[in-house]
Amino acid sequence: MECFNSELDHVSIIEKQLIRIESVSRKIQVLRRNNILYMANLCKYEQELKIEYEYGKVEYDFNRLKVHEQKRENYMKLVEEFNAFKNEFYLLLRKYQRK
Image (cartoon, rainbow, N blue to C red; front, side, top):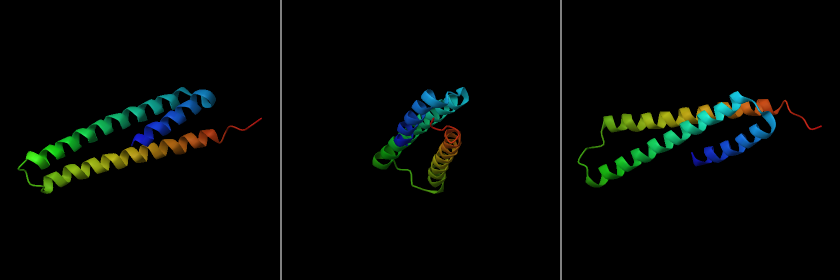
């Protein structure tokens, strides 16, 4: 997920220098914000798991599995959104040619 941010940095530079479309710039910001929020959510979840593993007495049952599966689905949704954006961005880039 950290690589998403670095790739968004590169895409943002290309957008500012070449494409200059406000909706693309906003989409980059939205993706970056979603990525950061999701990373923070995963870090918090990881800390909760570590504390639960060390000190907790709750068993890893079906409810824990559902929470974990939901986190995985959210991650896959983020990856799909990012890939869809990259495809749109590359289609925009195809319009530009060297002179």
